[in-house]
Image (cartoon, rainbow, N blue to C red; front, side):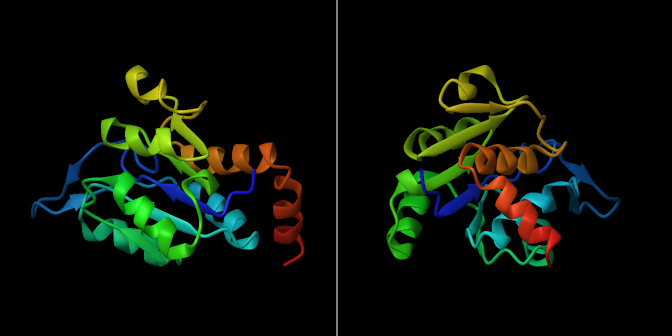
Length: 167
């Protein structure tokens, strides 16, 4: 299977799904830095990455900017519609997309793509719609584990690692 795009949810995948607030009421999120290795591998293989989340907060944009992720969709209500439109823009099909999500608003997209997964701590009723469950909890490196599994299953992991080591 040729994956031409990786789409990721944020809350519950890159984060533990918790909401933290500072004394001024600003929302904070804790990201696991190991997930950035997944981004590095995908970029080395020239596989585009898109963030798609129901949240519309600056911290997600800030994280994406730091990791140089160009495609960011915030405040998304219908992930399948946005993903379909984006795939049409790129000239690819949903069968060529890998997606990781963890909650009820991810189910339709989990069902529609060619490669789908949930983190270990996703609800069981969501897991049943994903093709795979990643044995790592959201916020604990689930995105990196997802990317590594995707690349290994498609015989691309060794190539990505070699590209990284030869930079």
